[in-house]
Length: 282
Image (cartoon, rainbow, N blue to C red; front, side, top):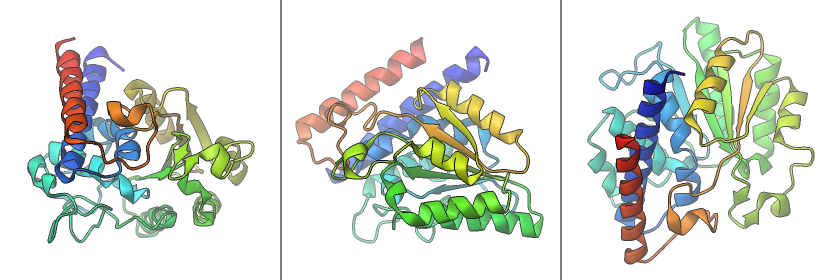
């Protein structure tokens, strides 16, 4: 990756984090943790990798992104808004009456959302189905899907993985947001993954790439580029991330959902703005 691209993606990720905080802050509470941890992946996908067009969001040969962990909707709304699907400020109506930006992603409500998700595990199956559909119809493009490590408690995730490997879906890339926290505590305490998510997906027949730092745009980009070269099997990219990355009230606690005071919101947004300014000026 050249220096300019890395810088551009780091700026985009910082912009996504700032807008994600503003979107959730407009409501005063929400899923900060699992939204913020995905900002770097969203920046790589929508900033460089994916074949998408905000002016033609339903074009047939587009790449798809399915946020199976649908409660992370705010990071999706921030990304799509910054990409130009709509003014990002529109998403400040998060979860309000008659909003186009519900707490969990809904393709019938928000322009640019490819699949309705939120019931954990189902998005993975939907994404595999979309990848099969592209294969059957001869439509180019890759289907990217993101699941949470806590979401991997759902058996449906593993059924989807088995299906993707069986049908040799080399047009399917699964991201696992391995932030090691879920609603009720540490993943290792709530429901341990035994030998690890990487080992499980490898056993199913995935090409597995595990990143030491899943919040590093260069590592994410390199992994996606490597996945594109793989033929005859799906790829899983394990993102070892920090839950709440960039939100000072959530990063240390790893909170799944947050309802901080207005003062804490203002401080977090100010810190995020300062981080963006620093990256821009680097």
